[in-house]
Each structure stands twice: as structure tokens, then as C-alpha cells.
Image 1 (spheres, rainbow, N blue to C red):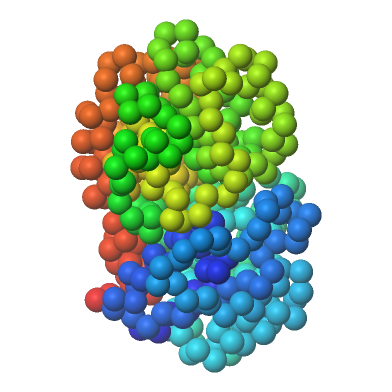
Image 2 (cartoon, one colour; image 1 turned 45 degrees about the horizontal axis):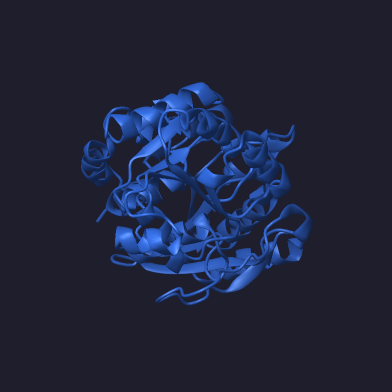
Length: 376
């Protein structure tokens, strides 16, 4: 079948773009796939990052047509007409926040009016982490242009069913991110970050906003260090005020045990951070699911996470990691101490190797085909 994808995509950066690249690659094994992406994804005042485009190598990637400007409705109609001219059997939208609802809803309706395509939304989120009063209205309007849906956690399933009556959908867990390659030599990775070979290392990875709970993790680190020595690697661009986190580190007296790399991490550098770590920590205050778990699993790394959204569906307590209550530095500290004192790394890594087989791209492709009526 002919498939068109509307989403952020290379040369734009970030987890959604990585996801779409992998989705295209796996769909292309059996289908003809095109992508239409943004020429301006966010206005500058909504994007606190340093750049919206990928840095460094992106092997095998070819830029997708950059058409959509979220601030220019004329480009939404242009993208809809372009999608219709591709004459796709299926038009896929990667949906993750209401900011894109007006553009996506318009593109979908224009394309459906001018072609016989069906529309499928792959929903990372239905309602966002940081909600506003208009979120339900915007999201509901966009999603009502859809014929079918993929949701990737039970919490997103619940939100979808609250907005769309009797939706045609499948729940498919977020597949593992393979785009970053495999693990690199642990000793060499640690040397890159000034770490000792036998050092205990935990990793917080990804852009930093309040709902991701880095401030809670820093409190937990200060408590855990009383029982076990380790280093926290923080790797990601700050979307909050970086100074407040630096001040918290100094106030807690943990500067000697925290290394901060405050920049967007390009694709070709991701493996080094995960290879250097013993465990990845997600201290989120709110979430639906997180691609960070799937990156960790790609590198066979266990995860300590909070019990929010769908995270506990993916991180199996006692098998692939540990799950603790959110916003509790005490519980998070106890989990970090237990991980190292009880030497759980090897046991959990084995569990990850087994569990991640459930998170294959084939499962997602099969679900898309079934929902579109084009089973292989």
C-alpha cells in the first residue's frame, strides 16, 4: 500500500523524528512510504532549545519535504493537497501535543476531501503533560478526522476513549529505538566522561522540564549518597532554567557526584552515555510513556522509574528495573541504594533482553496494516 506520514522528521531533531525514521524504514519493507514534515515546527518563543535541526551524522537519512509552518495556515492546506497528490491508501499522523492539532486536523481533512485515503493517528499522548483548558477541544477536533488510532499505553488509551466515541484502535507498546546502534565499550565510554572503570553510574537522559522530575532525583541522590557512592550523569538540553538546578546541586553539596552535559545529544553520541551507565533513572512526575525507556532497552540497560502513566507497563518491577512512587526522593533514593547494594544490574539486564522482544517494530507495522485493512 501507499503510505504518507505527516510528522516531524529529519532534518528536524528529537525523539519523534527518530521514531518516524524507524517507522518509515520498517514500513518500507512492505509498502511505499513518503514523509511530509515541518519547515517551522515551533515558534522560537515556544522552543527554549538551541536548535530545531539535527546535529552530527545521520547515516542514510535524506531530508523529507519541509512544507508545514505551524503559524501559517496556508501551508496546512498546501500540505493537505500535497498529501492528496501522493494518492496514499493511508495517511499517518504522529500526534503528541495539541499545539499541532489545528495543522494536523486541517491537513487530514483536506487530504481526505481530495483523495480516498484513510487517516490513522499514532498517539504518543492524547492530552499533554502540562494541560490547558483548550487541550480537549483542539485534540478532539483533530482526532475526529481520524479513521483509526494506535495508542502506546493504557493511560493514552483512556484519554482517547474520553474524546472519541467507540474509536477503532489498537494498543501497541512503543517499540525499541534501534537508531542509535548498539553498546560501545564501557571502559572507553566512561573515559570519555571522566569516569573510573569501576565507578557506579546512573543516567538521567533527555531534555529537562519540570515534569521530568530532575529536581526530585537530585534530592534522592543527596540521600542515597549517604549509603552508597555513585555518579549521576545528566545529559540533555534544559527547557527549564538551568541555573536553578545548578544551585540545587550546590545547595545539596553533591557537585562532586553529578556531571551535567547540558546540550542536545546528537544521534552519534547517544550510545556513549548509555554504555557508560549501570542504570537509567526516570523520576517523572507525570508521563504517558517515554521513549527514554526504549532507548535504555536498546542498550540492555535496566531502568528505575516512577509509577506514572504507562511507565510501569514497560518497566517491570523486579525484572527489568524498579518502580517507585512519584515525587518521593526517599523512595527513589532507597531504590538506587538497593540497585547497587543488591547488585541487581546483571539480573535486570537479563530481564530487559527478554522483555524488549515484546517491543518490536513488526508488532507496530502489523497493527497499522490490520487497522487499515491491508494485512500482509
